[in-house]
Amino acid sequence: MRASLVPASLRYADQVARSGSIQKAAKELNVAASAIDRQILLLEQDLGVELFERLPRGMRLTAAGDALVTLARRWRSDERRAVTEIRQLQGVDQGHIRIVAMDSHANGFLPNLIERLSREQPRISLEVEIASPDDALTALLAGDADIAAIFNLTPRRDIHFVWTTELPFGCVIAPSHPLARRSSVSLQEATSYPIALQSKALLIRRYLDAHYGWLFTDPQKAVVTNSLQLVKQLAGNGRHVAFTSELDAAPELAAGQLLFRPVRDEGADPQTLTVAIDARKTTSRIGRMVAEAMKEEIEASLARARPDRTDAPQ
Image 1 (spheres, helix red, strand yellow):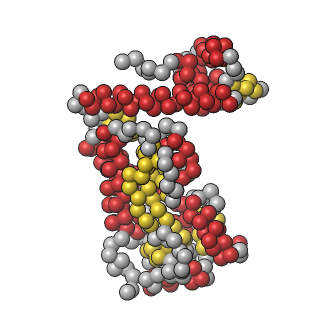
Image 2 (cartoon, rainbow, N blue to C red):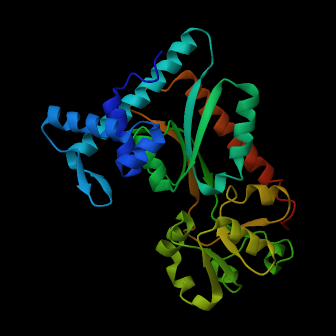
Image 3 (spheres, helix red, strand yellow):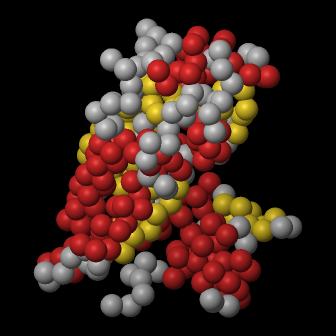
């Protein structure tokens, strides 16, 4: 089978949209810039519309170009799925799956998932992108991802929830922290100590601002960062309290480096994590296999992070 059933002109337009210029697209595709420019001009001539705005520093999609590139990406996604299904009809579990997940998963369940699939299904290739919940949903709907693991995903008709779990809202602390002696904490108790606070770029901070913004009005009591790894490091050093979920800190909880304490305040709603696929498309057999493996690895990660709560007094 040739490299792609999608016409070269559409693939070129897609890459120019991603790269922002013909020269950058040419380098990415290893194709002459003149060939890409000629194909785009022919497309515009055939359609009778401009697909790109020619700017001094690059190319920007017009509304018509955006519609065409969206179609091209959908065709490429459908093509990959069709090739996978054809191979499966031949009795071969082979194909390419694109996963999008959150930053906290990168040192959580994802390495175990990748290791498991490489061992059990070596013919399945994976592409993993780390994104925000909003960008993960966009990638799934645009056909740029086959499976997504997304925090606090709102139900919608075009998304199928393969599996969802609730994650109690709470905080992580070092075993030496004074709050370690408690089985749960209130927000007032937690915020009497220095806080390692995630920036508004991260989901948990938006939740805190929406529900408990008044607790974080004193800037001297909190260190703010967009790095979850730094937040966990500060909590592990013993002074700071960090608000997050068990899954965000699963490796450190399993290793005993951090402890999780649920927040007992009324209205402290749990977060959710959902393994999701595009409901508008038929999921391939290997897609279902990978989604099931993802669910199992998340469950295993949470089980390791919850060792019967023997670290907390009852």
